[in-house]
Image (cartoon, rainbow, N blue to C red; front, side):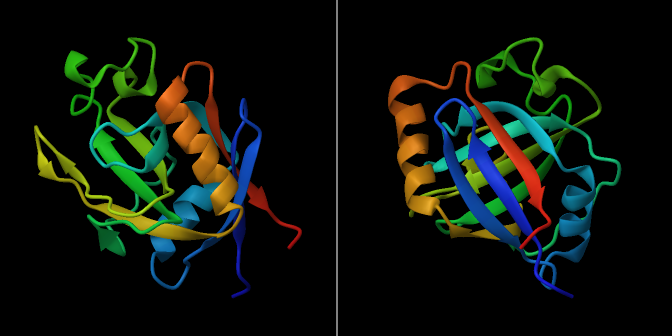
Length: 168
């Protein structure tokens, strides 16, 4: 199989990176995400995991099993998480009532890790493994700078976008 690539961007900040899907390591997750593209949603910066930006999305057409799991993502890892709708709808998480966190039986979290020393732990649930399904091969420094700007200046109005790059 030829390598497949996804462009990940922060619309408001104009940051773009390119990630290669890890089809050999996470075939079901790669297929589910690829088939759903393009997707985008309000961008968030993690409170607990450290150097993570993510979007919460409605359930995909297929729900892949956990593949290529980690609780310590590396810079450039792109991860897939699936949560039951009630798991992250608590007011403690701070998501607006109209967000995907409150939208249905399942919420998908597509996350990009842009720096080191990440630990996927949640005070309510403990360790929260994610499926690593892609790795950033181009543009990580610019994306990290934009993500850090989100942390320092806020996420309001920012969108995290994922789209296929078929022409590589």
